[in-house]
Length: 329
Image 1 (cartoon, helix red, strand yellow):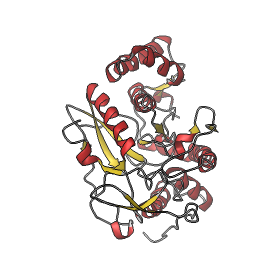
Image 2: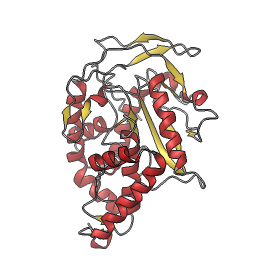
Image 3: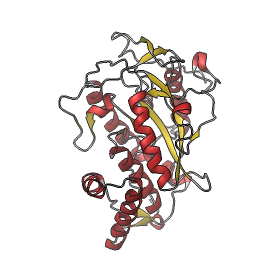
């Protein structure tokens, strides 16, 4: 690491400034001050160091090659615990976020079609559906974000059959391009740490997950977090240490705003939140399962696009079938 990038150790006045900035933003996001204090005390993580300037591509690549496997392996270990969380499907209906959020919050929906690798859904317009209780959480989250001049951009929600499978293959080719010196085993580790490899682990298939990024409400420019969506590598993990002060604050706010509403954040992707899925039964602070937690949303294949009624689910035998990689681009 080039010394010009680092500020180390973190000065006390910098720690104080970070706390004050996040607290001020959080007070506007969520009005219950006593609850805010408890959430910050329990979950706010301060950096051990900060970058004096944003990483350049060369340094990011060096760090990626050095750190990717340790981050990927920690994610895979967590996935074993997440996969052990029982799922008892509630059959709660799906709702269309584009209609549900209309006139209630300022929000942007991705206009990118599904990736060409996504089977029957290749190049088609994305669906933006989630479970109803999750949608109610999302509207509260987005209202709070709007209060602090942040416009959320929804990148992805429910993924119909063929989409997660295609994105799994897409991730393989992205990783291979980014890390050409990786062994095949290392490639697969990195792929599986970022893109769920089975229906059980794919909360997007359950309508229980959403990927979103944060935009400045005035300029509609993405807030700086140190990466783009949907990058790979260690630098997309929430607590990746090589960040500027601005990037660190924005990541912590993403995390804290979700936690404050009972939502879960996948620690290895700084855009992925979920609700009542098996990830919600995982405690990232202790790297353990939450005792007696049962997920209520499992992977589904089809639902009624008029009323959201779930019509077809994945069988238990299909839950753990690993997606196949299409080795041809």
